[in-house]
Image 1 (cartoon, rainbow over the protein chains, first blue to last red):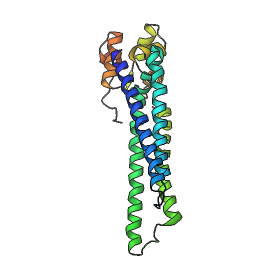
Image 2: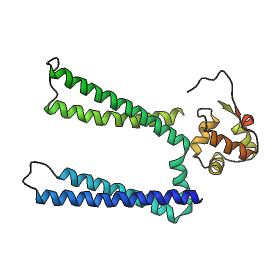
Image 3: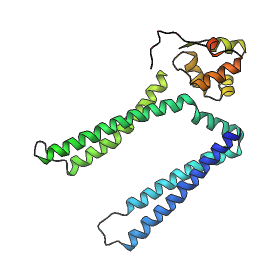
Image 4: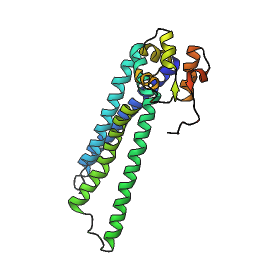
Length: 154
Length: 69
């Protein structure tokens, strides 16, 4: 029981930390964007990251603050998230996604190396953008797919 | 790994949800355990054995031929 309360308190603290970090990053993005508007850099990326962190923080706080008040929901959330089978499935999915990501980065690295001596066309412009997008989306798809398959099979 | 979880649970007249609540795992984990699709951690195995007041070997049946996952 105590352990569960402690776990929820930790999550709430984490939520506050995300929120605070988000506010700082977003504010920094806005201020730097105004102060250094002459620089050829889109500072909205920093502001966007801040907003993302704020969103994560609020998500944590909404989820775990309600759990803190209601023992039943605290128990449900705690069991849901700490269930050993679920944790094992997520870990396995993470491992697979990591391997795929490493493979894609390796391919990219090899491509750039071969492109340097003219064996392959260089990765630039749209091709580079699509490659980077794939390097982000494919591991994510592997992660989600792996969770779905393992939920069925284990 | 085979187990007698369902048999012991039925003896106690517990639903899968009740058993899941007692050992603090999800109902899905109990279903997977009973179907033999999931092997529990040593801690969960102990918790289940203690709950039914039996030895782990009585609850989980290890056979030499089993391949490692």
